[in-house]
Length: 432
Image (tube, rainbow, N blue to C red; front, side, top):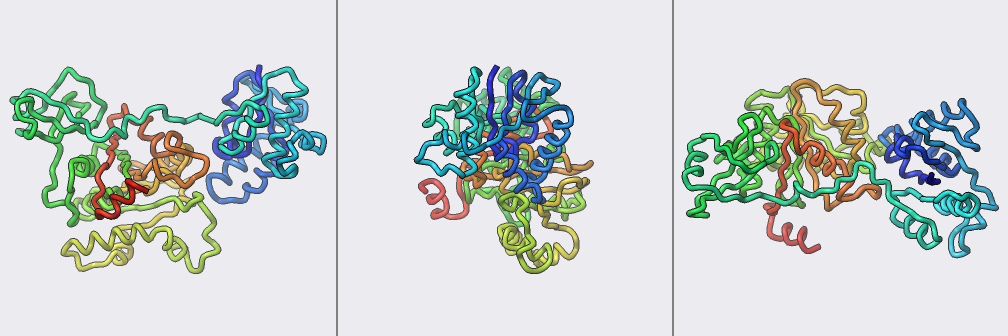
């Protein structure tokens, strides 16, 4: 039996965290309740989680005294602890005693001194884990939804096969090998006799073999794939059987540019989708836009400028005389604020979510479950460039989805390794 003390960020990150500690005691310092109250008015995922926890505890108090602890169906006991002056006095004089983080830590200290159970402090704040260890309290990160593999970030896989099999792939025949591959895994296949003789392929789960990818030598909307990974990406973005595409890569590799170009081709040229919908998190996700002047489109403009830049660049590289504003007016392209996506159903649309590495797994789930019939979702991002303080390379929404869907035939993941924006941009991304 263990005494777990939960930090505020754990409950705001995952409101269902209380169900993940079977048979133990969960201690929620009253300071956590105060901090949750601060977030409850937010119209974003954090606000939703804050309101969920408040309702959960309100219902729980009807079943017993929260100070003594109320037992859940899974055997876990939940109790709320008061942080009074006596508890705060346990904090080192080196720390600010009335600071919320330190008051929360004081509960863990008191429990460690007065109860025989092991005390573990759970927080997603690295600094708090450091302070906890210094004070002699065992601390851990909340690691639900943590991905333990970086398999999709290995880049292009290269294999060598018999020369005659390479010829079959060139002739658009299916080649079956004894090796195991993931559904929609992309590879460069070389001839054993001549490594320069190669073909780009995808493992097709239906035929259970390698198939040559579709090449777009003239590009899409004036954007030509410049390397193998970008060619893989075009195949995934235009394959109607693939409903979810995850794109990872450093700045300047063309993630958003190629996704938008493919989206325009599928929406306007092929008319496969009713509309191209583009969104990106306003960090923090759902930050109130009311302080900015104008209507919603005006408020979104600063956050969506990278999307507008990509659209302008694409149109400049085609014979299209229209501007991206005209695409919006014709309702062919739309910008969406993720703040307002909850409760929506999005059918028959090509939906691009940019900067997905800044979303939590729960936020990503909210987005993916909005997909209606005929919708394709494309997630782009750089897992090494995260602005959210409570997620990292292994716990962000993009990496999480790539890992969870790696065995699914309706999903594909492509990592772009080579920067194509400029030599300077590539060097900066690598060196800084």
